[in-house]
Length: 186
Image (cartoon, rainbow, N blue to C red):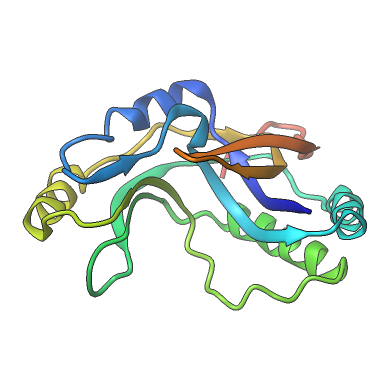
């Protein structure tokens, strides 16, 4: 069995910048450098044949390379005890287009459609029981976060391996995006 997700790997300087946001809340399990990515689609556990079908289906995804920005912070769930803190993404039509094409590819490979609304973000921390006042203060202090432009030239199929302390990720396949003639950003 393979536990899979499809994501954009952030460049090292942006991941290092995000690590500077990873502090200030007790009881937190902060993401580590190699865990910072932008998930396009969580797949879950699949058998070998389905894995092969997904690899092939994603090879047919066509999209242009683009730029996006990380912007602001937030929490999941929006009500009740906070379980995840994340940094958000400024609106990007090209990111949504890529995500929709990835979704079409994996459903074409036999997966059920993802019923959740796409909310692009990078998970910074998972919480078990952190004081609500500290979480609120963190959100207020980091609300103005904004990255520089981040170029997306590829997306990846990752496998996730659960360990005792944390999950580790491995790139199983890389899918390059097409560079536009002028290298335009969006």
